[in-house]
Image (cartoon, rainbow, N blue to C red; front, side):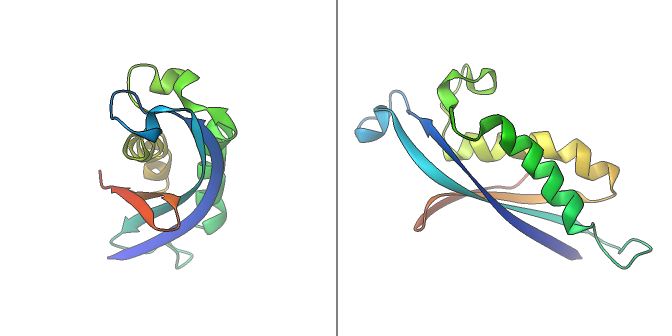
Length: 122
């Protein structure tokens, strides 16, 4: 099994309803996003997937949520925009696109700070 990981970041504001504490107030993060894809075999070029392709796919998704109030976006209309839900959202948006390149999503890791992260594994 081969894996490729890229890292990008975005900034956004959110609030987490009904969890108690300061996170119920509007606040922001500089989120770091780690995307890992996997494949059993390399393509004819000797790659799992070109880094540029993976960065473009992720960049297009992050463009829609960067510098946004996440609670106001339709994709988080009925759920808390927690790091867990952000990770799942990114994974679900990326999955069909990376499958076209013959790879599978292995995991999405979202860092809210340098010492707090969540991982979503599809």
